[in-house]
Amino acid sequence: MNAESRSPVPSFRPSVVFVGADAGASHCSVVLGGEDLKVLGRAEGPPSAMKPGGAAAAAAVIADTARRAAAQARASLPAVRAVVGAAGAGRPQEQAELAAAVTQAGVARSVRVVPDGEVALMAAFEGRPGILINAGTGSVAFARDPAGQVHRAGGHGWQFGDEGGGYWLGRRALDAAARAQDGRSEGSTLLARLLGALGLQRFDDLVRWTTTATPAQVAALALHVLNAAKEGEAVAQHAVTDAARELAGLALALEPHFPGSEPIPVAAAGGLLAPQSPLAAALRESLAASVPRARLSSARIDPAVGALKLAARAS
Image (tube, rainbow, N blue to C red; front, side, top):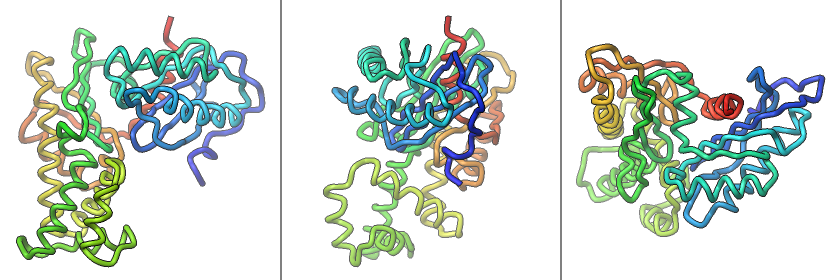
């Protein structure tokens, strides 16, 4: 059963509809709901992160995904309001451009665009203080302090680091493959795993593949590091431990915004930090060592629902 078929089809046509969207670098999720915040429709789409000059392209994906969610909800667009949490929309200019494009695409009469971490914060903490660590294609942490102010650490893109995220781990997989090819490190199955996953025969084929691979394609290699680590391979386990240490470092950078000695609620989001992921387990250990006040929750976070809540609560 796919994600779009899990939400029940309502037997009525809602008169007031809000839209929440999570526009990420690996996929797009859109939910529709009424004033009671019940999810009436959900749809998944391809990547829709905001890139400089790319508002129209991102809006087209969001609009198509929203129309499919609306069809499931038996609702018509434009909705009353929409909130879009978008990767790559950390600055006012990108937020304004994407909001205008989503409005023009007919998704909602009023559209607000915020960084993707803000909608995940709402989904995780309902407006209460806490830290949200997100590891997907990249990595970022957001915090809402006790005064209600939002702070951020990381999330500057793969060129600047995005340590502990998918691209970073995918790059570690390529590094391990090269070292195994040269005999410069202990044995690793990562080269064989990457060749098999990509349908390649030799290391030279992998080198050619990297010359045209996008950051998202490199990030997708992180899955093979996690699988190898889960199976006990030392090289992969070291990479996962290092990734967890980097992610915990984001929380450490945000800890000063929580004065005193009270415990700090921490939530995890992003495809790499699913509850059964070895990276989630390693993050728990790293947080215990570097941020003893952190209390990591294992609850799954639904950023699109967080965006829906922001849309419904807007004045």
